[in-house]
Length: 476
Ligand code: NAD
Image 1: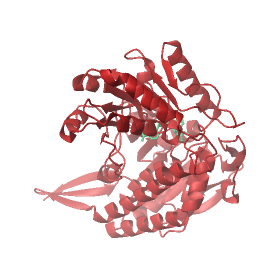
Image 2: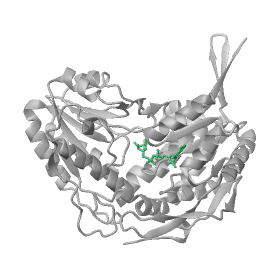
Image 3: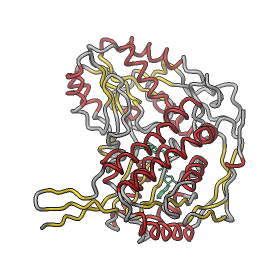
């Protein structure tokens, strides 16, 4: 069922605490139906420049705030977001197509937990530390340009804005073109807090126009970008030429490594759940399943059964496991990658590219498991960003590590074993930013980010806060 709300029809940018109307707007589509459910402003480069100036002027005040003031303001923001939880969830269901249970837990509750975590961290993080004869001052880096992707728009925003405000910085937010509504609602919540006007500014619009304009602006001190590796390269190159810090959170192709003493069915089912979460549009999803060669057929069968059991449906329904992909373009890209893998010899153990019946106008793709691919096949190395898991065989721990590392990415991963010490030792040989042992929980305090082409820098926790800090060491 299509839902919409007057709060989803927006035509303004937020600059210096005031909403300012833009002549140009863009429609927002519900990917489950193709219907228009909202609208967002298309800001200009001049709007972006005004937003940076507003952030600079708010920074003059916020940059001098105490740790306690930062903690209190962020706790207030978390509370305002909690009050708007139902609206944030509804917008996420409608614009991303995330099933409502996923929108609640993985998008909105996690975003609120992150702001809560930064509230505590802001209050606890010393602005000055003594090291020998030095006083180390953590000083706000200044204005952070926050550029976010469409797959987890509110979560990504929380990670960036939480870290920046905790460090005493101010921000200009450039949300994704196709899923801007949750960001508007987040900014409505900001407007109800005691943060100084201009601490958070919002300029929705075209990334190819606003991104380069923000990065080039002399008033922007740090660029915090989450998105594709292709655009991340451009952002990094532009920022690098200006000697401007760029934190890049990019793509992934993470392996779930099942060792020979693991509970294989549990590991396989959890890996399918990770690969298909948010319809596979999760940067840290485990999209490769590496299993002992002598249990390969069993693993493929369990994975196929788990994938087939996922129910596609209206994302607003609690019984839905699998929503649509975010756009027709994304659906076409995923289909092409699956068809190409099959043309190279991959066996479709579940799913495939045949249309999902019953959702006219929706961008649905079947939960797909691919088997019997050649070692090193592109489908084992390249990010698909859709509900597609590839199963590969390994010949022991050393081989599993070599296989897991045989990709240009290094964002996340998993290791499964009855022996946690053995699993930890394998985990520490995988060149990746996060590894979960036996399905351990996500930790909002742990640094999140990538090795290799998965990015530069870290979000979340003290490491995330320190991406927004400049240090001055004073010796006496
Ligand atoms: P994208 O790179 O197309 O866009 C990301 C953002 O960059 C958007 O806001 C876009 O408008 C903007 N943009 C476009 N051109 C730009 C330019 N030249 N300069 C600056 N900004 C520009 O990515 P997407 O398709 O929105 O998101 C999907 C990608 O994001 C996937 O590859 C996924 O793995 C990645 N991702 C990574 C993480 C992580 O933490 N590592 C998290 C979520 C998503």
